[in-house]
Image: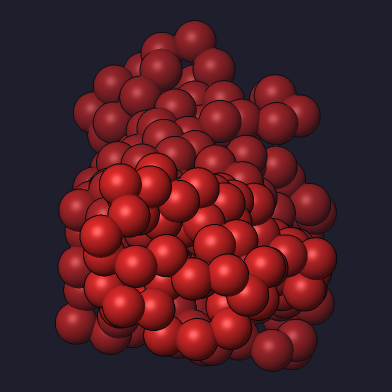
Length: 277
């Protein structure tokens, strides 16, 4: 529709036909309505139905948001490999319990008064340890810490030890942290399970377990393989670092969830306000 001139009481176009109606005509009101009604409809349709260009812009913007959310919610491979999905930390090393020689790391401090379980060992025998922890079964491999504590003969019918020790870690990200290990060590069993009941540093308020396996024996000296699985408390914060409210992949999932929720809220607000059209 094309208007041939400005609308005024003396110059009112009738639907673009070039005819004019004077104010004295009683058809002024009806003719004016006939002329302007389609124009109002055109504006209304323009607001309700976006143009093709506007639809393309909306689609591109939404696609960008979807791709961005997918990227934010996917942790990098290195982060996934750093911890199990449930936040468990896995440590593996070997303990060298040396009783003989000029520099033993295990020294008997109490000779039990009980009956002899096997020759040389009696119920109540107590030994203090400061055993080396290394990466492999070789005592000359890289050191990762010390096992400091004690074990005692706690059975009258077999070689069963009650172990109470702190695993002090001295290498890597866990340098200076400790794990408190307590449990029953039935030496005759292939694999024994001991409890992780606490810790310090990066392992403050830790819980978990240790799979304890004799790797080799050289007389009374023993090399023990330790397979440690440990989790920290959900609110633990340490001097060397903060575990935060959640650990490992769980924290990343929660963070990604907040990002997604905020982005969806922004998109909803923009769409609801009609900014794009």
